[in-house]
Length: 411
Ligand SMILES: [Zn+2]
Image (cartoon, rainbow, N blue to C red; front, top):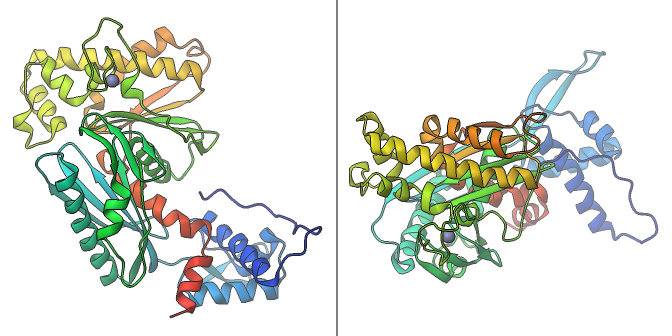
């Protein structure tokens, strides 16, 4: 993550080897440049922020410049003295992260650079959800994305695939009810067929709702501290950030929270799950529609029916909003969040969902009178998961650039 790094005194009790001390100081310095985001930071500011001497900072900055991790952003004015200074910023060439995502209507691939800017975004329609056909297509998209990145002087250093369900060991999709996947080692399958130049490419798998929340958090400038991003895509998932830290583990399967004990059977094996009322295909089914008019996108099909004034789809959306409000109210009663982002395809349908969700939050959240909760569409919408996946891949360099430095120096 990119939380500002505060001055840390070196540990004096245990002897630190010279090379590990250098690596530690490099991380400390680099994270300050990352945390400064779009504002260039000078060598003297780095020295003040880290407590390292000016000569040490100069050596580290030279290494970071040589490795193309940072650039000199040109002369700027600083402080009361008004003396010119040279600002340092993250480079837009060098290491990059790759994201892959499986949506209801398309497969997507995305490359982001060190600054978090999206440099490549690709969509491919697909038929059928068999991992034996989906994963090779994703691998082909990954190869194309790596090639496109190379043309812009970017080297993909890691990839993350977003999966609609719980994931174990950053690799195995244990259960994706709406895809029909069980125990699919997507990470291993993709690692076998994707490479970035001569280096092995680490490919991880993460939960799509959690990665979408990460993408939205970056898009907000990391200003939000306590929020939930409820993503409606294949499956309904929730990514939670509390006190600026993401909730990990198996959490986030909001789609399989029960909203009615006498409800219909869910693909997960339980009954009355939120998914049965607010899943995109469930909304269409409640309106007696199969969604074929949406060109493969259930959200587009719903939007088309709303535009045509179909009263059944409006009733189905109202029922979906009520079910979402009940499930989200339960979540907000347990953990304190001040913002509910409607992510994924829900962002496209937010106009028909927000009022119903707010109605249930007012009825059910005990603290609602004193701690208002804002419900709004998420800015990145359906692209959030793939962008968040790519960001999580490049975050490994943002956290610790020593691996990249060693790679550059060994060339
Ligand atoms: Zn379920």
